Structure formats: structure tokens, C-alpha cells
Length: 157
Image (cartoon, rainbow, N blue to C red; front, side, top):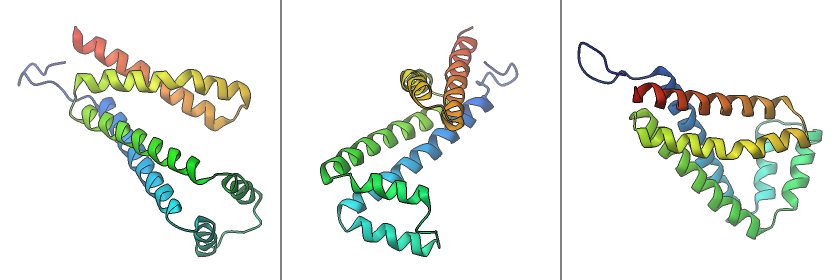
């Protein structure tokens, strides 16, 4: 949509909100990727124990014990795959964020495709095990896809 006085495209607040969200998500994934790389280079069990002590967490917490059990089943090959996948996904999210912040049409299409492509998996996960977090993620992602499609259609007119 163009501003009638200046002839410039108006920046959509919704696009900027999505861009910030994607940027934060990308940075979080980048941090996770570096954490996984760090785990590959050392004794991650000792590192996790250090953080549990540093954060004064209850080492007998059932969620923490569940997480430690899951992590103990992860071998080096799985960690490498997780690292590569996490860095790829972080790069994709940061690319989407940058493109959306710069109001690039390709970024809107890319975000619709990448966000929409995962929604069937999210629905499957909800049917497999219903949690509020999964429902919230699905609703937010559906809203993002809907909004971006609406924004593309509106800017085309």
C-alpha cells in the first residue's frame, strides 16, 4: 500500500512484528546450534551438571531427569545432524526476518511456504499428544500464514 503524500510503501506493523519474532527465533536456534556444537567438543553431561548447579536447579526434578534421560540416548552422529539442521533452520529464519523487515515480497512468500509446510506436522503432533503449547504454536503459525497471504493480496491491489 502506498502513502498518497510521499508515494512510498507504508511499512506494515504486522510484517515488522513477524520479522522480530522470526529474528528472535533465528537467534535462539543459532544459540542452540552453538550449544550442540559445544556438546560435540566436550563432555556435555559434565557441562549440563555444571549449569544445573550454577542455576541452582533441583537435580531430582522429574522434568530435568526426563531431559537427562533423553539426552543420554543421543549419540555423536545424532548431535552432528541436529547441529547441521539447527544451523540451517536458524539461517532460514534469519533470512525470513531480514527479508520481512526490508519488506521484500519474496520473504513473504518464503515465510508462507516454510511456516505452512510444517503445519500438518503440528496438527499430527496435536492429535498424537494434545498440549496447550502445541495448540498455541499452531494457532500462531496459522495466523502468520493468513496475515502474510492477506498482506500479499492487499499490496497487489
